Image: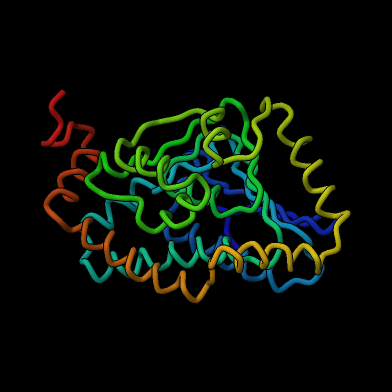
Length: 263
């Protein structure tokens, strides 16, 4: 399907490994498309009982790829809107997958990488992992991933992290609810396997219905989310082409301080 994504299916468990370790598994349009397609195909595969998401190398996912960001910085608002909708579709597909999902966070997760973690039903992280929602440093906001992150950590924690772009460690991620468990990196596979063993002992139909029950009881529906995604995609498209967004992206890509930085 894509050299950027490794797929392995064993005893009913599908493992999707983001495979761009040279750029810390950052997103570009090809990886977004490959991951969305893979999830859709796995959802339709009756032999798959659960899906694991992890990263190759030292990182889980660093968010947006620099070359992809450079292209979006010079793109039109319409093109940015279409691009954001594709990322929104990926997050929505992952969040509403009928199969249980496990994020195995092997390393740093930033921006959209945090979004992937928040979209998964279960999340475990290496205790060395770092996290961040750093969009405001670029004059942007984490618009597309915001519904999932806020559901995971609550609006109070989201408010601080969205506004400050603060980096936080794995223990903090556990405390605020982004991940369920933190373990030594060498134990990540074993702990992940134990979670999957629990899922495989449960009835597959019951697991699917239990997941749908949680979504339904919290008023979380794919059709509703799609409408929110359109609004959030329009927001980020507008911010990317704004004066502040252009300055923030330009400063980041040019490795300089943004004009609004006082220190």
